[in-house]
Amino acid sequence: MNRNTVRLVMRREFVERGRDRGFAIAVGISLAIVLVSVLIAALVSNKNKTPSFDVGFAGSRAAVEQQIAEQSAPTYKIKMTSTIIPGDGVAAAQQQVKDGKLDALVADGKVYVKDSVDPKLEPVLAGANLAAQVPNLEQVQPQTTVQLAPKDPEAGQRKTVALIAEITLFSQMIAYCMWVATGVVEEKASRVIEVLLATVSPRALLTGKIIGIGGLGLLQLAATIAVGLGAGSATGALHISTQVWQTVAIVAVWFVLGYIFYASAYAAVAARVSRQEEMQTAVQPLNLLIMVPYFAAFAALSNPDAVWVRAASLIPPFSVLIQPVRIAGGDASWWEPVVAIGLMAAATVGIVLAGARVYENSVLRFGSKVTLRAAWSAGRKA
Image (cartoon, rainbow, N blue to C red; front, top):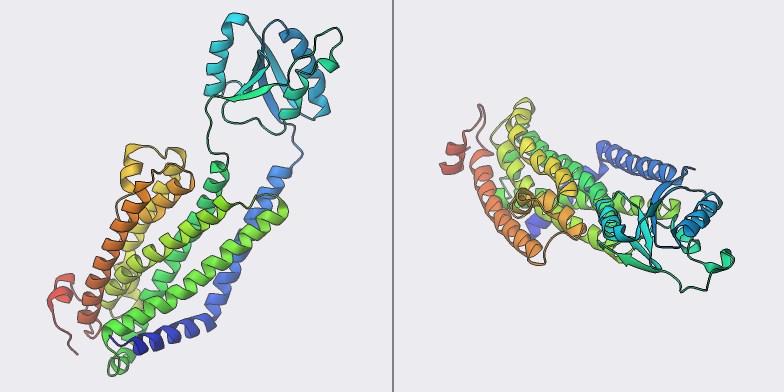
């Protein structure tokens, strides 16, 4: 396969599609949706709500500490329900913290929390154990925070970023794979394909088309993520950290693998039909196939350690949309991404070779829809 020919086709697809008004409209709509989503998230998070917390106090100082905390709560613009815990009920109260029934437990000069103290609650809990605020009480040491069920503090934010990127990735993949399929059918329906294949091999034409359109898709994905991260950082809705950039890199890797896999399949299916009306029906099974892992990814967010989620995150092509969520949330073991990427790469090579064969054997066969069996076994015929 001639590299110069592939490069020529790739440049043609990139430039021509990039000049298309539909591409500009799609990019504008995508960026507008991202900006609106970020602004809504910022408004919701910054809305003047009075947060409510349920805190348990234990020990002989519990009544005094509860009084201090209740007096301090209005100062910090929060509502707090205080519960006196008997001396022998500390263990049970700690379990309530783990279960999420209590937001915090103050006992023996320590603050017990599930994973971290809410920033809005932290100053009140600090004031609950400052003897300077209470006459006739001995000086005490500052409190120590004890995490009963610690977790990655960045996991929640990275999962949010992964979810947004997941939706973007899915929409981008569907849109650009459909562009590949539409381009194949357009060339076939107009008989331009006969002129092109007089000087270009089918595989070079297909390779250049997939890379050129995929380059546009990757460019739009990068622009969308950049605008989203920038807007999120500017409005305070998002804290940009190393983990966030890692999540973005993970999504980019899986976009490349997933796009090449599905684009090859879409091109092969589209080559078997000769009219745009037939294409929609022909690619419908592929649309359904890509939607399965998309909806499964939402379930993976809430239950990432489920057996079926772990299995699906390794199996191509479902891993394209499920594995990034588990990686971003810190739920995947070190070997899972390695295995998932290895299997997906192998599956992508296989589907590219199979798709190229079907495309080559179908693209010059006009009229009725070419059966998959005929497309697989037949030679290229005019």
